[in-house]
Length: 143
Image (cartoon, rainbow, N blue to C red):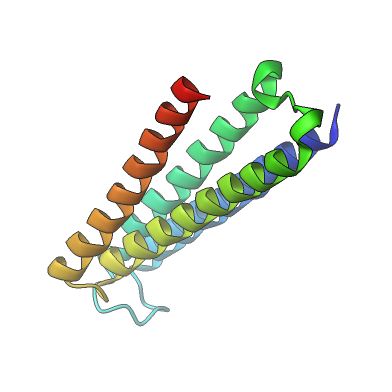
C-alpha cells in the first residue's frame, strides 16, 4: 500500500472516530435532555450533533471508497510539485468545508446561530463547493 493510500485511510479512520464521538454526544444529550449542557435550545442539540456525526461518517466512507479506486490515487511523477500542491489544496479545502459545515450545523441546532446568519453562511459554503466542482470539471476537460 503506498503512502497516499495509507494517509487517506488514516484520515478516513479519524473522520469515522470523530463522527462516532459526535453521534455518541448526540445520544448523551438526548438521554440527559441537555441537563449538563447550557445550550439555549437543548431540545435541538442532539439533532445537530447527530447530523454532524453522520456527515463525518459519510465523509469517512467516501474517503475509504476512494482509496479502493487505484486510478484515483495514481501520481504523475513528472509534475510532482504541482501534484503535491493540488493534493494539499484539495485536502485543505475538504477539511475547511467539513469544519465550517459542522460548525454551522452545531451552532444552528444548539440555538446560537440565527436564521439569517445561518442562511448566509450556508450560501457561502454552497457557492464555494460549486465553484470547486465547476473548476474540477472545467480543468478535467481542458487539461
